[in-house]
Image (tube, rainbow, N blue to C red):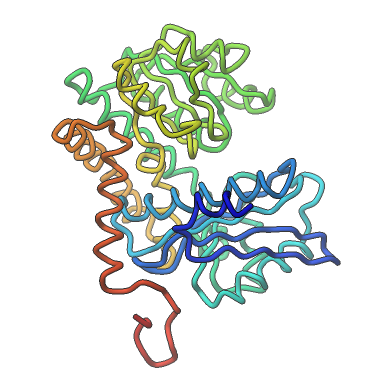
Length: 365
């Protein structure tokens, strides 16, 4: 365990949460609050063990800090995971217990939706906690953050297309979408509106049925392996992370990888392998930042048009990252990391730890 934490020594705080009566087992990880309070969603997932949950929350919270930095938000990065099957274990009692743990952090962590959690869940958590975004529209929130997540991925994909083919249009391009849940399904809609050919796969028959109901001309393949090996221009991973490893790359034929999943690269070095093969990889935390942009806008009183305009800037940020990658001779993922780290480092020189707003004063620095 000591070696595990040594690999993640950059985190400010990791909190284990347990509530016996409700069965709650959760971990909240705060990577950085240099730019502001840490915002990140709550993932409800049946992890095989606590170490797997810890690894996921540490990786996800790091990505959230970089995501907020590149999105130009005055927010840090955090994430939370609840260990369990949301279909079986989720209850009002559990969510309210979890909300009390968030409240105990006094604003250092602000939660939102993620895999396995939805706006109605955030409404329940908010009954015990004032540091919640992604709430339902009926409760004054932004609602489903997958709307602008998918829109941002689409903008990032357009920027990659412009860099690779000289035009941002995806009309006539063949795009494979792996995972057509909340984000992937909406991405398919943007692609079909643009005139792209779309091929999809998902482990959920229900998700496939919903996509085909909305877009009957979409092609369906059996699994991710078949999709990766298909004749594609763009491959869009939109399911769980870690899908891009050596075996996936061996059969991949697409010239661009740009999708909504978090932590797509299985391990460090995959970005260099992609570059060596001439595959343009869009850093996941850059292009899927539309969701954090959407829920962050709630903090100022939600305006969808304002949030969408900010999410549209993902196109410009992606172009700047590709230019920096070319100038410095590094893969786009490394260029994105450098841009994010420079912004976080600049803020760290002014404030190293967010302690919330004292009554009648300004943030502690």
